[in-house]
Length: 305
Image 1 (spheres, one colour):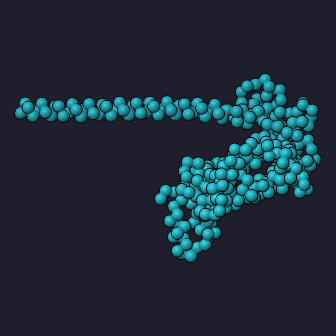
Image 2 (cartoon, helix red, strand yellow; image 1 turned 90 degrees about the horizontal axis):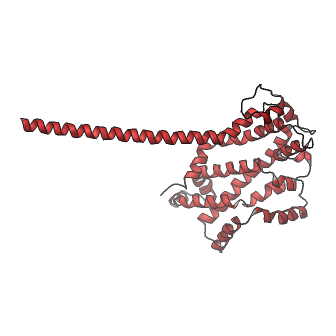
Image 3 (cartoon, rainbow, N blue to C red; image 1 turned 45 degrees about the horizontal axis):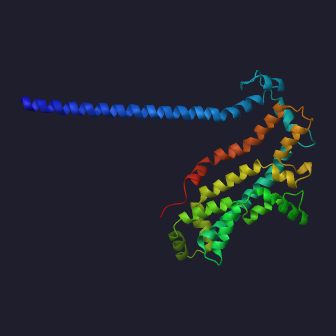
């Protein structure tokens, strides 16, 4: 009897010790997770504070912007948004928004079509000098864009297309966005060829395989390409500055710069900040609308066989 009681006590002690170890592990895990989330929250606040400050500064007067470091304005004044929207020219910001979308929307469509077809050809077909052409694609990715500015300008001048949107849109129709081509090639290579073979047995041709079979699988990658193109084109300042010379054709980026120079240096910062936030809004809306697909496109590389 005494021996049995001793064994029961030993088992109970072991069980109690195991429960204590599990409790300590849970406390350590909770502590580590708490520290990690605290650091992430601090970093997020540090990263997002400039945006919060800009939102508050858009409601401040010029004097308050330079005298107050806080983001909360003393009073909310919507005048900077109203006056900034009117601009100092004969056109409103709405006109420049329309000009921007005349560039952005066709370019996004051209990029999606061209890079998808090019990546599909490199990843699924065999043709002469394929390795040489692919090497050229990789090598061209390493070229700085600045060295292409003068040849491109002279080419479009010869074509008589300066002061039009053609130099900003048409190059994308020929898969000049090589980073996206390379990215989609890797996605295509991650998709099993068994899907292609099954579709061929069902009577699909190459184009039908691309549209009906592969593109739905690669939707996150294609949306990522479209999202990057949208944001980069919305923020592009140098290319429109080179090719566009008419004020009525300026996109939003040049219009913002022009509003800063309109008064010879004594410009109203609150108006500029207000219009910058308005110009930033489409990119933010599109990003959060496509965030799910964007994360999938960056984190994955196609489906696994």
